[in-house]
Length: 246
Ligand code: ADP
Image (cartoon, rainbow, N blue to C red; front, side, top):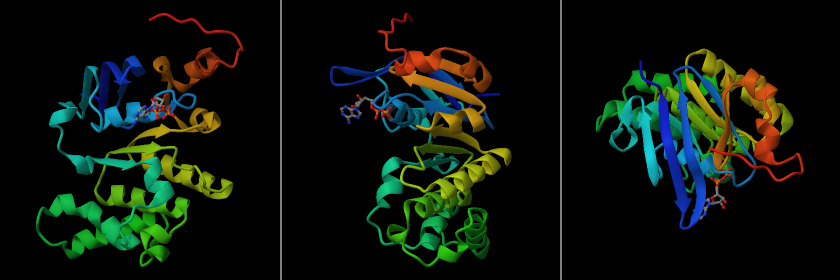
């Protein structure tokens, strides 16, 4: 069986400035991977490379067993970017319209059937925003918008959900409910890759942790991460200059 994500020896630089050096990591079906690292450590860059939004300078990337540049099952992936949450885009679509868009890939150029519409309504229920269906996306709070994009991914039957710091600007209570929603989606079989600045969230909920600072300091299960020195090494909180070899 192939991995959902398979990244091998990826390096990437913005001009002269390396953002990723020789990063290899795999994500298996059903996994919940927490991707952590200090600000500017390359997390978003790695996620973009994973999803084919940037091409690596070196190395290879496969999604669902196919080279990422040949991958064209976009509906299998739900991606919630930082910008999506904080700005909500410029299109004045309603929440219901946004979530129905998740069905477009399944109907080609055809019209949505009643069954497609039902799937969209169920997705709204799953993330608990059916009451917001007629509101415009750009008028929602960040946390509500989060859920709308996740509902769209559910409606499209995405089996990989990639989220970039999804709870920035979301209040503590809604955050907790949001992470419970992620857990239940993961329990239903959806693979999750979560960039998260709150390390406690990752150690509480993720199965695997990738700890990044240009190079990978740890990639493995959450228990072995907690027992390792990867965190202080990657974040430099020991106060000493960290030397590492690869
Ligand atoms: P993180 O998500 O961990 O905060 P990023 O992947 O956004 O890190 O950025 C990694 C590094 O690449 C940072 O030093 C950042 O300043 C730089 N960087 C990110 N995007 C660009 C860009 N479009 N052009 C130039 N440098 C960038």
